[in-house]
Length: 146
Image 1 (cartoon, rainbow, N blue to C red):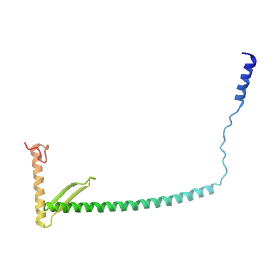
Image 2: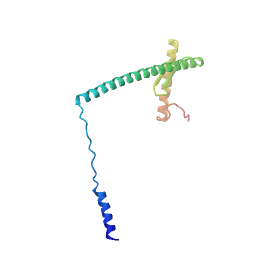
Image 3: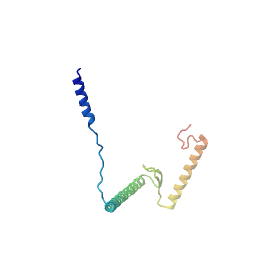
Image 4: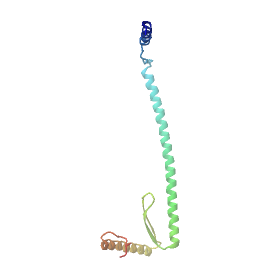
């Protein structure tokens, strides 16, 4: 390589390195702090009012849905009550619904039917207690007859 070639390479390098990188400065436009805070306060107040309206609307919609669901559940329970009454006399239903809420339903039209249900419940509880005692707690409902 000749000296000219070397000089031309150096000159191109020097041209590249002679370029300076100028940092970009962030210039701020002076704005009065009172006007900015007023705008922010107005926006915040408007946003707060809008959020309160949205929350109120959501609460109203939720209460409508909840009331509708409660009415529907009551209708379903009444329909179940009527259906069971068609096939059996006085009854007592104890259990949980699909959302694990406890349910107790007693259907007795006279005090004698009420007493009969309570006596039946007492006998069932006594039988469960006897099964627990006889099986050491392994079979409280008497499913396994040995």
